[in-house]
Length: 296
Image (tube, rainbow, N blue to C red; front, side, top):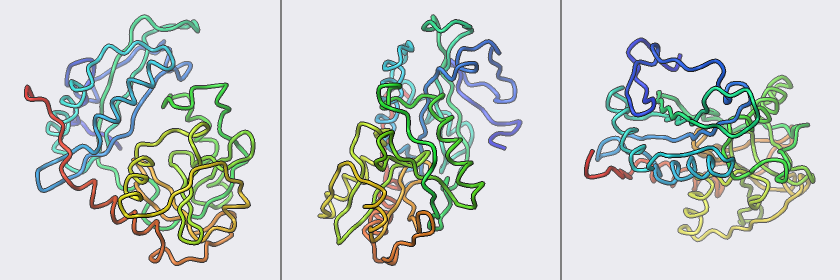
């Protein structure tokens, strides 16, 4: 369960009990997946609970809504403040935060007149666990960028992720790896891909992937650590010759990949660039990043 009888959520400017909240069953979001969301993590630090890159996440939520023509009449700082208050009300320190912008009742395919915002939070360990992953290349590809807004984190897009994940798990793997519509490496169902070859780090370029905030953080850390990074279009055959690989995302954090379709990576994870970045990321997110307004 993600909530109990005492859990509080934020809904349209009010804090209410999760088990007492309701929504209209004719919501356009429920019927068509026309909504946007974020995944954010808060961490216990020496300066109290701190939400990692809160502004970047809420800026992306706003951008996602605007990209798909959903009205977004909320101030980012107000949502950040509300999230800190929500964590306090639920006595959460290390937590996963899920903001959701959903639309009013509308059975047509026209843009909504009114939207709501909900924020909930719960304790959640690393989404993909802490063991190296066994991946399988999915038969599903990522949607073509001319068919959707790739940069937007849209509810309905994740049907593609659910199909790919379940296909991989049904075949006995931990998770899927998706290609783009041209057959190049793209990303995981909910995480971005990096791989290492001869001491150089590689990651798919933007255009066919979600621009992950954790991905951007890993790139920042790699630069600080003096790692060479190359962005581009890479085939599965290039990945098959790699020394190591990892996924990264807010929910997954940084997690090593043991194999892809039973082909194991030869470099010991503890000796990899990914391991160094995993450790650096873990330290970074546990520093204080509070961005509260003076009002709160």
